[in-house]
Length: 442
Image (cartoon, rainbow, N blue to C red):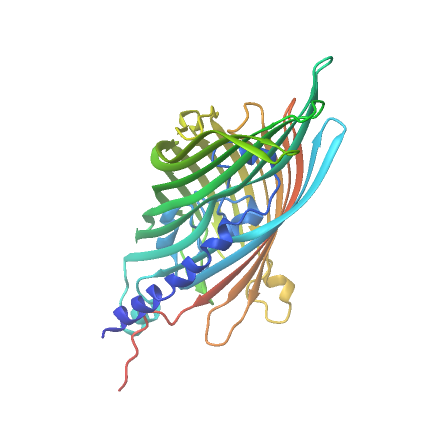
């Protein structure tokens, strides 16, 4: 069997590992009230760029994966596997009331690789102009997790208590490809979104004796195909030269990626009942099972620019807009609002060639962003990010990394719940230059 097919079959053999983690990704470990709206809190899959505000439109790296703009696969120089997890501390405020919460989960599993090995070209003294990169990834798409209790007192009538609980979310499996010709790269991600959202609302009448509680339970299963297209153009400001594993040379990269509106299907079960906690009596008011429905995710686009001197410095900015006012879901009709995000970030490496000072080889990252959230008209998010790319030398491999990022942010709104949060992300990047290597024996 040719080496190419052997290596490709080895890649496919890793896919069951990705599917085995689906249940882990789907488990909610959060208490965020705003995840009650829409499909929940949308997850940004920024991976190694989390430390510099999740920049993705114009970001590419020969040793790291950028899943958001598929054009970045065309710049990969080595097979790369990335896995990560996160933990988050939140403090919720509503008037004088406060609540604290810890959460965490697996954040991503991704595998990407160039479809040829650069060492083969060196050995055969061939200069390749066309480069092809491919990726597979299993990612959380949105998360739902909340447990809320509110009490309302009506003078001369009754005291009512509302209990809101929800869990679940959606995930996606992506397959991506990109082709790089000279200084231009274009790519596409196609995949499948799937998940389940469960929600319960209970209304209790506290002042009435023997009162029934009204209980509403919804279970919504979501399925649909997703896709995105991306492109990156590199404007060379200084000719490249090879310094160890990094091709240095100052350049300006302009990038964009996005998708049109995407349809999805739902299967839902709705239960409405009354329950008497004293007599343990239940009355089912309505029950609908396996009800089919449809929905629509909005069109989105992100554009950005980045100046880079590989192995030394990066500085970039980007702008995102999502037409969430066009969001639809027959199983859970809601009105959402258009979302915008602006971000800036930078990465600095003091001396990538240093052998005796490890701190000089660390990738120091910083960034900030502002975002308008689509779930409430005046809900805004601000955050400052700090990150570190810690190089690790493994036997017979290129440099791998431990990527650590911290995000300090808040959600602000005039009349609803405010949230301050600190999020820590930990990612592992493993690089291997032996994939698709044609061994010759004399």
